[in-house]
Length: 575
Image (tube, rainbow, N blue to C red; front, side, top):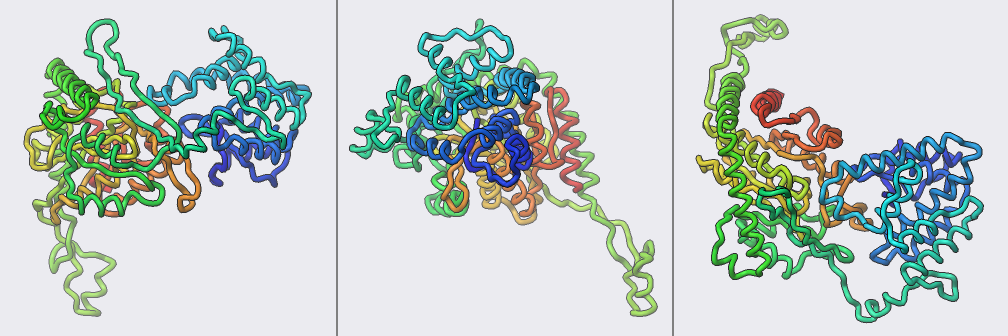
């Protein structure tokens, strides 16, 4: 993807653009990124060559002509595909290496598609994806995808010739939009679309509607991971309203916070970058109650799907009973050993014991007898833990495993008398919802098996909200600790605001990772020892390292959970 007005800190991408533009004085209005937020150097090269061969001021003005259209990002992608072929033909005579670079970019495209989550796949524009697949299949020598006649004509039109100048490219794009999207050019040469006129006259406000999406398969037959495909994304995101509030309440139940507590938390956290978002803390009660039955049929269907997932989580734990018990036993032993060392006080100053050389002068000079150290006595210092589970749609295919791992960690901590609260978080319709699956006072950990996945994940807001809720429930004598079970891939449908709300960005990639890193830093500064249990795509290892520093463990198999979490706890508690 190519984004406008990128961050000034993306030095690598800027260097690539400057190098191919042959001009280190330009301030590029565009940069290219992959879905995980890393720079797309191949398209940064295209942007640089566009600066070299074309009038970027005219191109930027053209982008603005259709910028208010809800399909603007699609049109951007089409135009850049056309420009890619044009500058390639212009430059290939001087840079034969472009053939290899182009082929590598194509192979990278197909490799990345295999790593995308279902969430990301669903949010791709299918017309754009088809054209990208056709372009990179041709450059890599792969078999061309099956396309309709219309899609084939689109692919042909987007092969902008190298002989075109800036005005020629703009005319080609105007013709493309006119043929395939019924755009017309007015007398002033500007783009317009008559289909938008009724919407403008009626002042209709389009709103993105996130429909809760969870796995509805039974785990049987040939499709054990069958997934409901109900999901909509219309127009722009609008701030949450009463309709969304009723939807959230119908799906997740009442808010555990009072109205006053809710307002305080929203006013504190849902501002600035998270403007328009809301928080909702609910009890993870998954029995099909009369309250839920009184809501919409959709909420009732969701409730039944969650109950099926609960049964699958229970079944998975039962099938792996021996491994679960062994992991709990080993992790409990490790934690008990850690605590017996961690809870011992540091040596303290005394009138007897081992002399401190750097303070010995005080005995004769200042008559200060406290120049000795003696071993500290073991004390009953208290520890309280929060386990926060990413419950977004990208975790859909790991629900049973995540539930089992959280159950093992919580049961191990409870067995050594550490109070543990377990919460799951997801985002939907602008709400970041935190469900309490196990309270700190609960000795029974079976409520954790109510875990299920669906929706988005605004990690930073969820972590901050969990920290504030933690603050509300904590005891003053407790050392606080938070473990986040995550795939380190924050991604939300609600936008991210920067520059005091003047600029809106998608909450994904580099922006989302940096925002989550800031949230974790705030918690650590507040005295909450925060770490991550990472299980997910290895491509996101860089994200978890950036967000949590060294306070994380990479779990590849549940069998390695006990040792990995024990090492993580030791690291967190002794830092």
